[in-house]
Length: 484
Image (cartoon, rainbow, N blue to C red; front, top):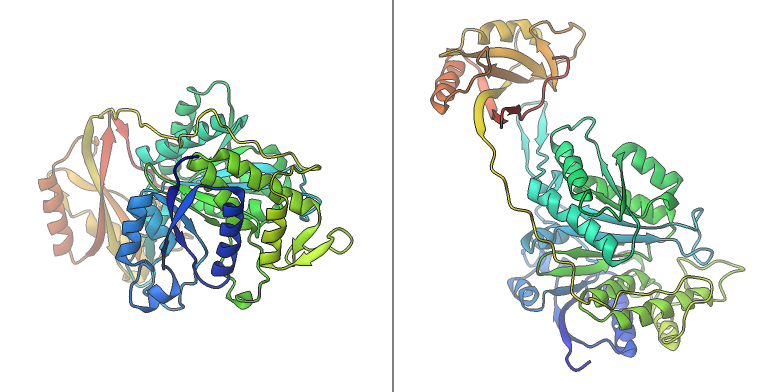
C-alpha cells in the first residue's frame, strides 16, 4: 500500500488508554497503513465545562479524517452532561449502528455456540431524539419520532450489508401491533425494500418475541434490522448470550464519517492494572480496516486474534481453568496476537473479508413522492384536575366550544376513550386528550383552530399541547383511541 489513511484516535478514560495502546500496537505490527490524529474526549473535557465531552477541534479532526477509532469514556455523575456517543452520531449523521454478535465457543463460555448474528440499529431518531416534556403534575411525555428517510436508510444499509458480507437472511423487528403508524412505517418500508433483494430471505418479528428468541435460540438469526431503542436493548442481549460482552466491537456509520469502538464501558475500577481485555476495541478496529479498504490487514488481525483464543492465551475476564493455558494482562495479550499474525485458527472458521469492492456501503434514497395532505382536526391536550376527574364533567363543558363546526368528538386519558360512553372503572390522570373534528371529518382551517383554542381558554381550560390531525391521500394519519 503506497499511502496511509489518516484516522482520528481517542484514548478515552478508565481502561481506554491501555486497550487503545494494545490495539494500535497490533494494527502497526500487522502492517495497517494508518496515520493518527489524537484527540482528547471524555471526562476531562466534560470537567472543563464542555457539555458534549468533545472540544471543537475534535469535531474538526473528524471532519478531516472521517474515521474515528474511539476508546470508552467516563461521563461524570450528575446532570448537564450530554452523551458523547449520541452527540457524535447525530452531529455527523452516523445513522447505522452495526454490532456483530458471534460465539467463540468453547474458548468463551456460551450456551449457544452456533450464534453468528449482526444487529443493525437505526441510530439517529426514535425515542433517542430526546424530546421530553413534563405537561401536568402527573404526566411526562417523550416523543417517538420515526421518519421515512431514516427508516429507508437503515433498512437499505442492512440489505447492502447482507450482500457485501454474504449473509442469507434479514429479520426486521418492530412493535407495529401497537404503534401502527410509527413502527408500522418501519415494517412497511422493510417489506417494500425487501422486494429489491429477492436473493435474501426475510422475515419480521414483533420485538418482544424477537427478544425472547434471541435469548433462547440466537442461532436462528443472521442480520437483524430494527429501530433505535429496540436495537440498543437486543444488541446487549445478543452480546450477553454469546458470552462476548467484553469482546464485542461496533461501528457507527454515516454517509461520510464512521466511528468504531468497543461495546463495553470504561471500567474505571480496573483502570491502570493491565487487566482489561482489548478484544472489543480490536474487533472494532478490524471493522474499521474493512471500512477504509484494508481487508487483508483486517483478516490477518482477526485470524491471529482467534488463534490466540484457541491457544488458550486469555485475559482474566474469559480465563477458564482446564481450558485456558495462560492468564495474561492487556499488553501481553496484544503481544500474543502479534506473535500469531499470519496464522489461521484451527477450530474456528477463519475470517475472510470481501476484497472485490473496498468502497464503504453507500446508500441512495429513493425519490420522495408527495402526498395530498389535508388538515381534518386537532387533538387538544388539557391539564385538568377538578370534579373528581369525571370525564363527563370536562366533556360536557368542552361541548360548548364550536369553531364553525369544529367540535369535540371524544376524550381519552392515557390513550383510552373515556368520553362519551367511557367506563367508570377506567383510572384517569390529570392529562386529557380532547379530539375536535367536524362531524364528517372534512377539512378545516388554521383560523378555525385559533378560534377553537380561544374558546377553550375562555372556558377556563389549560391547554398544554396540540397535535394537528391530517389525512394523506385520503388516508387517516393518526391513531384511533383505545376503545373507540
